[in-house]
Structure formats: structure tokens, C-alpha cells
Length: 500
Image (cartoon, rainbow, N blue to C red; front, side, top):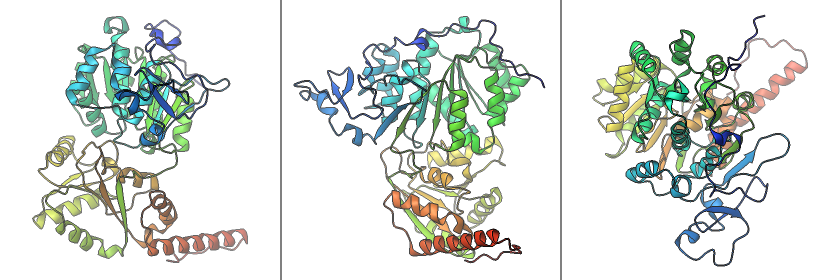
């Protein structure tokens, strides 16, 4: 068998000094305790220390900001050290942007220009960890600021490694979809830092144009795995200079079957890189990926690692016959208010086209988004939806991740998704950026296998569970028990009949 060898026997770009221990944030002192879950307090606006508050610490505005209830108020931030053996000190979270970036005025200018008031919970704990050179796994729902959590430290990382010394791009962000890649590129452009150049590489885009930009020299490559693997295998891009790697929405990339491409890409990236992985869920596949490609990471998660929908969304379940779904959807659309903006999720591209055509013939302006549409059409659909030219977007699960449209008021699940994780991601398209939202989900008898998992999600969010859904879950449970008994008794299964 051919042995896959790493190219890193020869020397590469110098690794930043913080990789070996870190001197970036002297003000952000490590916690004295090795406990992995702290209730944090703030003192003198510099660092946080658990459970030991000096006399007078609660005097002054900044002291009052961080009180005993801070951990609860900030969505229960939890941080663990996943290193085997002796655990390391967990860096203190930061309270204000200045605590992390006071020595980087250009970044502070960008933050003030956008108008952010305080870091989000994931940012407050992720920045100190990344800035000290540790690998990080960040688990939080979409729309919680994960993109800036890895972009800001990435800018500083690149600034300390000039392009002429690297010999190529220094930062790589892998994303599952074109839409998310373009969105990350837009964020890079918005927070421009010291002339750092970025490029978005994705299938469906101008391949020749992407190659021309890459060969001229860029600092940040934002890419989908398929197109990047294509350029890599044809020697159009050199990944050996990458020292800062981001695997964004890792769970979605695995769901889409990108693991083989990711493995090929990582073979060309130096092993002493710093790696950040973000995900909205923490399934076994993501754990396996983290164990293989991250070195002694720390994990930060907001809320719980158990699957749960965002608490700003009211979830409504409608158990309905399949043949009545279209009429119910039309009734729902007719009842829309003038300020409503809705995503209708469907299970198939054909269904998206069918519904779009049907509503168009009825004089209802809609756009559709799915993988069979040309890239220019997909971008136009998103643009129309974001700008409010249309208030209804019919989409497959392509739009369930990373779609940054903050004024979506309703999510309408016309078809139930293939798994419960995707349901949570769909619901997370609304109720973002401090707003509330509503998710309406149509459930038919063919969806009975997920009824029990759906009930768990609803109960965790203190949502109303319909009696029909409870009955559906019980019938499926009895059906499975019967099938298991038949298998154990060795009876021929025959052609099973669903017991709905």
C-alpha cells in the first residue's frame, strides 16, 4: 500500500510564538482553579477569577456588569480542557472588547464602527483561548457570533506572519455550503484589517477567476471542500503555508459527506497549525473528527451539549394528513402580516420548484433556494429575500445552516427533515439577534419514527406537545416492540404493515 506521508519534513513558515505557550494576553490571567465550569466575576476590568471577589469589587460600572449570576445570564457558558492527563488552566473569559483587543486599535475601530456593545457568550470565552494559541471546539447555535469568534484572532495571527514570509495563504476556513462561504467572506470584508486579502472558493463560481486570484496571493482562503480539493489536486493552491485552520459548521460538512475531501485537504496542511472547529451540535462524527485533527483542544459550549432548539422560538406542531399540507400552507400564507418574513423548508428540490411555481401562478411572490439552481439564481434568491423584495423563501436544508437573515419571523416546515438535528437547525433560522420567532412544523403519519425525539426537543424548550404527537410516538414504540419480538422469535418478517 502507498503510505501517505506528510510534506512537513522540510521546514515551513515560522509558527507564531503564542503556539508554544502564548504571550498575547498577559492581562487575561488563567484561573487559579483547574475546575472546568466556573461562576465568573469581574474585577478592575482585566481578568476574571472564580469565587474570590476582593473587597469593593462591586463598586463601579464595570464591576457591576459581572456579578454572581453572570454565568447564567450568558447562556451558561461551559469550558472544558480535553487534553489527556494533567489539565491546563482555562483562560479567563473577557467582559468587554477592550479586554481582548486593547492592543489592536484597528480591530477596535472596526468593532465600534459596526456598533457592537459587548461580546456574545461564545466570543467572551473563545477569544482568550484562541489568543493563547490553543486549539478550540466551539459548540453553539447558529447566529451566536461564532464567525467573529474565529475571524478576529485570525486577523491578528496573520498580521504576525507577513505574507512574504509565509509564501502563501495563512488562514483557511472550510464551510459546508457556498452561501455560508460567501457570508464568511462578507464578514472578512466588513472587518478589513491591515490590507489582509481574502478569497472565496466554491463550486459554481468562476473557477478560472478563482485560480487567478489565488496565484496572485491572498491571506485568507474561504472555501467549500469540493472546489478547494479540486484546486489542491491540480496544484493551483499551496496549503503548506496554512497555520490557522477553521472547520466551520463541522457537523453539516460531515452530514453532506465531505469527510474524504477534508482528509485530503488536511494532509497538505502543516501539523503544528492552530485549529478551530465550530459546530451547532456535538454528534459522534464531530467528536471523531475533533479527536483526529485537533491537538489537545479546549471545548466551549453555550447552554448544553444536549440537542435543543433556541429558547427564543415558539414551536408549534401540526399533525396533518399529507394531502392537506398544501391547503394548510396556503391558509398560513394568506394569514401573513405585512411585516412577516418566512422560510418554508421542504424535503426535495422538486417540491421546492413545485410550490414556487404554484404560488407564483396564484400571484404570490416567492423565491426558491436549492442545489439544482444556478449559482447566480441562488445568489439572486438570497438577495431578494434579504432585501425584502420577497417575503417568502422556499428552500431545502441548504438554507438551514449559516443563513444570516436576522428579520425572519417564521420558519414553516412543510416537510419534516431527515433527522432531528436538522429540525433544530431549521428552527434556528428565526429568533436571532435578540428577536423572537415562531416555527410551525407539519407532521404526517410517515414521520412517526421521529415523534419521540421531537417530543424530547419540545419538552426541553417548555413547548406545548400535542396529544396526537404523543399518540404517534406510542404507536411507533409498540410497532418497534412487535418487530423486535418477531425478530427474536425467528419468525419470517414478511411484508410489514405500518401500524399508524
